[in-house]
Image (cartoon, rainbow, N blue to C red; front, side, top):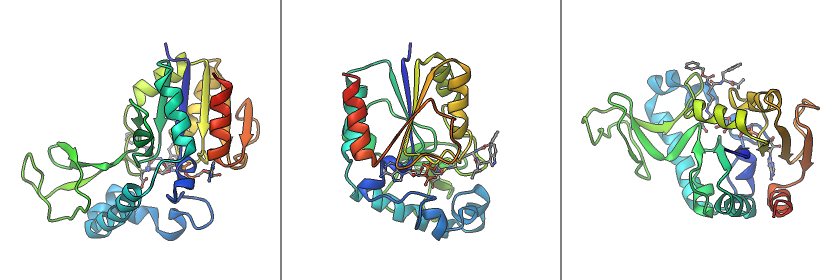
Length: 227
Ligand code: BV8
């Protein structure tokens, strides 16, 4: 029985220095996502896409978890009916101590063979000339869910949301589907819904409750109320 399902987005890693996507100066304001975060973009220019993710991998590996990641690690460690789902591809939740994190958009620390679907720990720098350690084909890609691809673990996530008492979305703009639809599934299933964000997302009333402020302040304070 999962009592609480938590969905995090780029806002939970913002204060660790990792860029968000849609805020001022965000990643999607600097890069055309169709060039660097779609299978078509990768087929057109694998060198550009590997360079984009090599830079993000370096940033992620050089970043440190913040107080929001640590508070969520405390909550998940002492509470086995909490499921932590993240849209983020960094490993800051794990490095803060969370286990069993569900990465629905994949992980920057993992690599995937586009031919045989073998997965392995990504090297710090990936290149189109790399060959798959299993089948030997030059078809390596970051193990990341691009736009137009099906996110991972969807059945497990939906089942947990439908059984949860509380659904909490932390640091996400709620613009990317299917994650953006999770709050509606939670409400329909009768769960209470809480949004924790720097400021309320544009659609008022989607969440029963909203807590605003920087995640490093709001998340530890919220977790404290559960103990
Ligand atoms: C799919 C990996 C179909 C890459 C990502 C309508 C309905 C359904 C789908 C669609 C639709 N229209 C279009 C689609 C397709 C598309 C989509 O939703 N597009 C959007 C733009 C409209 N969805 C897809 O393509 C998905 N796949 O639909 O497949 C299918 C069906 C059958 C079979 C096969 C396929 C796949 C989506 C996944 C794409 N990959 N990530 C990468 O990371 O490089 S998504 C991308 O957005 C990011 O990864 C990010 O994780 C995700 C969500 O963004 P956020 O995390 O919310 O970040 P954002 O910058 O937007 O917001 C930051 C928030 O933080 C803000 O609210 C801000 O206020 C807050 N914040 C900032 N600082 C702080 C803070 N909060 C607290 N404290 C702070 N300090």
